[in-house]
Image (cartoon, rainbow, N blue to C red; front, side, top):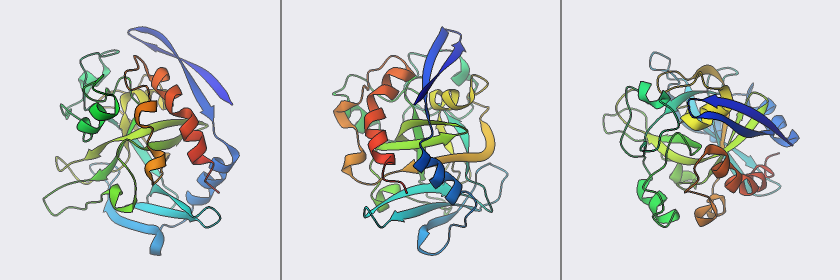
Length: 255
């Protein structure tokens, strides 16, 4: 089921369709949120959700024996999941409004720029944070801080990631990684995805601080939309619609 949300931007009102959180996904959320990520489920720890926070966040894995599949998610201490900082990296040549201009650490390209060009048959030069719903996963650095490469557990660049924010669910793609220009952070998504979740108060320097967002990544080549995604979309909803069928198929694995 979908609910239509009207988002007012400087470019006018955009209608965004949010998916209701399916029962199996809500059950998964309710099960992992209060649990502790330890043992074989804990892939790598030592990450922060805020610059001045504690290094108690981890990349975690939950297996589903019935299907032989697994999913990757972020978890913090106690019953905390992850927050949603704002990523404005990539191609901003076609801004929807000026909110990414408030960012103080924008990079000129995303991590998978070359893969985006290949998937889109060069119809776009990179992801656009104002249009494409993408999630930042993985931590790459050379200074000795905590690192993690989701590819080591089968997550593919530009694969679909499910995001549960409150009573809404959206799909994005794994579009960027965290570098070494600050502490090893987790919990970040493009401005367009944050806006769909939390409204236009989101900007390049203001995200959602509450650690209640569930990011779910899925391994395997079948999680990558490839050419079936509308990479040349002119707005969030056009791209979201193009990956929804695949997203629905992936979240059906959750139990």
